[in-house]
Amino acid sequence: MTRSFHHRTTLGAVCGIVLFLLLAVYAFWIKNVILGLLMAFLLIVLTERTLHSEYVISDGKLIIDNGKLSRNKIIEIGQINSCRPMTSVFGLVRYLLITYGSDNVMVSVQPANEIAFVATLKKEKEACDA
Image (cartoon, rainbow, N blue to C red; front, side, top):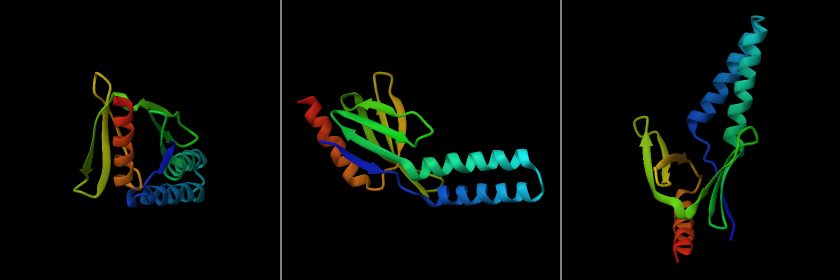
C-alpha cells in the first residue's frame, strides 16, 4: 500500500518566503542585480521546498521528497529505531524526529497529518518485522 503525506506549511516558512520576496524586490529597486538574483534564487528554493515536499510510505520504505530541486531520501522502514514528536523555538515549531540505522542517523519531517503518518509508519514497521 502506498500512502503519501504532504509537508505542513508553517508560519515560519511563509514569513521566510515573504521576507525573501521583499528583499528581492528591494534589491532590484536599488539596482543591485546580483543581490536581487541571489534573493530570487533563495525565494525559489524555499517556495519549492515548502510547497512540493511530501513523504511517501510504500513497499517498506519511507521516501522523503523535498521538492524538485533536491534529492529524495529513501529510508528502509525496518531500519527506523524511533519516531518521536519534538518542538523547538519556544514550542512554535513542531516536527517528528526519526532516527534510523545502526548509527542512529536523524532526520526531521513535518507531515500535515502527524497522527496518520505515525500510525501508517507503525503499521508498515509491524509488517516489515513480521
